[in-house]
Length: 551
Ligand code: NOJ
Image (cartoon, rainbow, N blue to C red; front, top):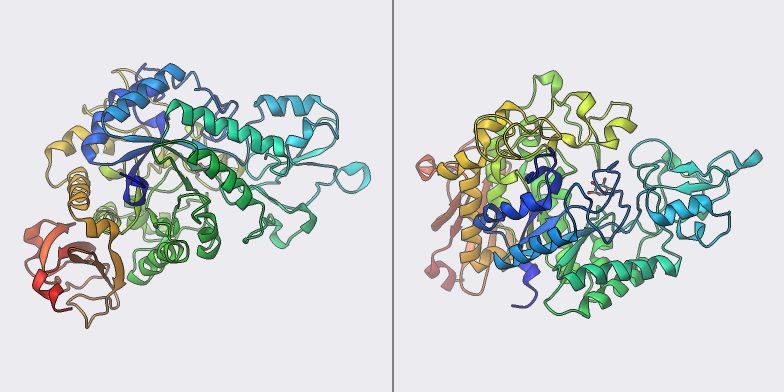
């Protein structure tokens, strides 16, 4: 099969929280390998593993100290090879995280840069500048870090280095060819081992324009557009990947507007780019419509498939997000401002997360799921401050809760913590709430009404009906189909070579008619559809063939 990634379903594993094989409270590669069956049974095509490289773990492993090894807490390279072989044997491809924007301050290159003199080749691998004002005591620009605070920190000799994120995450200097060569070596290291692809962190921000100087609000200046050297770097990555057989791929993490993203997924650059708009959209038909349009626009402009996401390790869980009914304030600030209103309504959130699952699995292109999404886990909002690890929490002085709440170790089986995450008696690195008992995988496997059962059905249906993966999407208005888009209803037709399907999502309080056709997916039991499509529900029907012939 060629270009398998065009309509694949990827399952994001956060290794530290998936399964703990050795009982130290932290997930590991052996634990993951032992639990691969559960992922295969879900019906996904590939895994994406967030970083498992040696790291001081200031930013959950996105502070990489060595790009070509495995952190001892997760195992070693032999454990990675065993995981890869087992995944391939189970029919799962394996993609891994590449973090090219920055490394850890524990990386050998940065240790060397600290020791080396200003102007040395060691410093030239990072974004190093002299400061402004008397004694160079003022940072080179007023730019702020994504994780709050300044984005410049001083070397002991007074020079400044730039970090878009935490001070322990120094940014590489991509204008230095040595950096590009090093990343080519890293890509080849993992491609030689047999990985099927990469997810590229902070993919659109590798180049900064410090000449732009101070900016209002201290926003960094990141050159965009077709002329940015960024494209040359991705073309070079692509050439490396194309040297290998087996259709290796990469997906970009980017929050850039569609026109920018489309440039990065041209045929000689990278393969996919997340549409993160859907992770931020409120539960209203116009907001969902707009977010889907964003992904489709990239596809129309570039020819690359759209790539859909509703959850990842940086965002509050969907069940809580939809239960709280608030807009997210922005990247890495997963604040849900519902506390005054008495907390999220998790019943509503679960209803909507089920409908969102039907929508997600019926969108043409590639789909990413985050571990625990298939269990309908809520955000763990009441973690004690002293167990929180996210630098977003610490650097904001505790005013932003940060991302630990979606990273809590998964519940597998048993009625008490650690719910099979690790051996009995072991203490997971973040405490699991009691509500996880009722959401453990073992229970959901036996319950046809569970979120897990829904995801399994949806992925089976998606496999069986090509139109759900590859169809052309046309929005439907209310007069075109019963329950067509109007006010609270979102509806579209997917047109394929062999059949067409209609997807209807009811985000409002009123029951709406179900479009005619053969029902293939529903977020509510069939019996609940007798009077029409209830609030916060979604269905997919395959249209009668005669209907299609008439068109
Ligand atoms: C995006 C990653 O998803 C996030 O977890 C991380 O903190 C930042 N990039 C910085 O690497």
